Length: 384
Image (cartoon, rainbow, N blue to C red; front, side):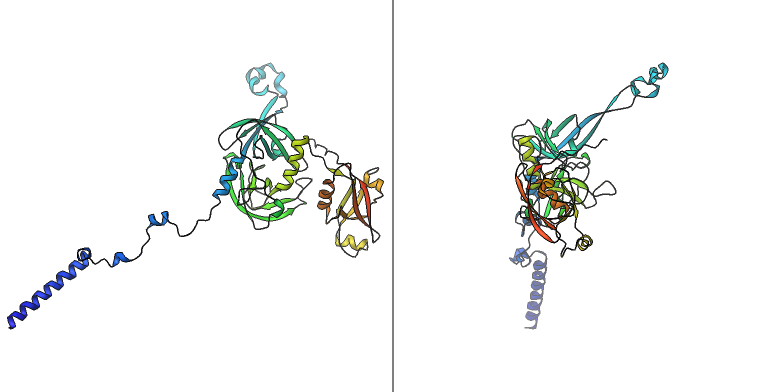
């Protein structure tokens, strides 16, 4: 009996050992796959079925990039004749190098196609004084361009190219832009090719910068560099918010302070240029300055409100209406005046030939003055 028990015990021990080895090394032979029952998502499966969408502005870039073009300009400049050119010996050895009287220089910038008819919006300084202008599209097409018209006071210009099947930018309502909104800057920085950078709107209504006569810039930290001028600033839907114009820099590259002309202003200027070839603005013949608390105290005003009229042009509409230096302009056609910039913008928006109402304060008394609006004189070109 004892012998049978020993045989049973040994057999059981051997079977348990075999079972242990098999369950450890090949559990599939026993139909036991406890580890495989754990839910594990592989990298390949995750790629096919992502758990959440990835943040991207690719759709906005895809929509806006075809409307942004690279602009190449060139012009001839006169070179002073070398003083030794009359020497026969000098002319013999160096004639080809020093006899030229002109030199061709080139520059680059960006632009935005605003109509399928071939109109391109860009900065005036990009195409100023250019003899030849060439536009390169994102689909590799190229075309010569001509200047339809320009407006130096806003630094905007409209070009025309003759190509078919052109994409056109969609204008956003720049008045609805908010500080903190994400924006993309698209252009051709340093000539490396079309580039998209991102940032936010840092500030709105920037003025007193000395860049243009009419300033109401959108400030952004989206990197803008030389060659981006005239390019697009778009929102996350790919709609045009502004035209990139200038940067604040000490190094020549982007330092996070760039400025764009709001799309609403750009559209107004563009439409006038396309229709008339130029921009017409209102003028009444006054000069103003910001009203400071010190000036308000000197003039014995109860509050700092409006802009101080410092000059009235002789025989101008304002002079004929009885406006005098020392008056404080507080309103133009029921719109409040806050400073020099608002005065300039409100008066320039008046239509020449119409009668406008200006509200002024004189000796603590407010009065409404009817003024016949004139046409703003064209700015004088500075000699370079």
